[in-house]
Length: 283
Picture: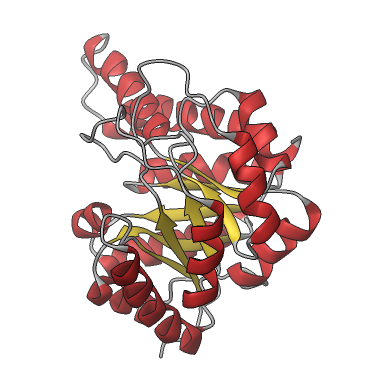
């Protein structure tokens, strides 16, 4: 079992999320895809002196390799002086969860939400038992939160009683709930079922997570935090603003020095994440 190195936060993510629950606050969880997006996120957190969760999906891990991605995140947190944690986002594989725990992740998500309730419970419980040996946070998902390429018309909201049962049966620390959000871009302004969220929060001890945070209005995010959301995921907007800014720079210039081309895109990510951190901070 690998010990956490110098880039780790003082509190475990389990402790931090519990602190958020008790104070009615939330953490921003941002995906990163390379050094540039990572530094853009960390500059924002550093300037505002706010904690942040750094998230990696399997595709990002495959792209950067696990040792490189973890080393970048840990050294970045230390260099920028940011309180932060590394989280595995949307893993459907127990094997990947195990690899990430061995690599020193503070938190892992096992997503068996598209399987039956019984299978979801069985898989999640296994991950919870494994992660306990590492004092790592475990997040699961219950209900239908449309992933990229999936229909946003389909519904499958999280039922409060099912959420209570799922948490009790698995012992999971955090639960991503389906209340009307979706991954990717929204075709129209999302309408979150905040009453449902409040009901889930009232009978569930797990830290509640909102996926698909990109594109949700600030006021709605603040209301979600007030009603129990402790972690808000942000990914699509980071990729979009980075690539849009980069494309503009490339089209408008003959510059071939990537050290001059990338900074405007990095700064754009920083501005975006600062806006989101201000929302979370002032909820």
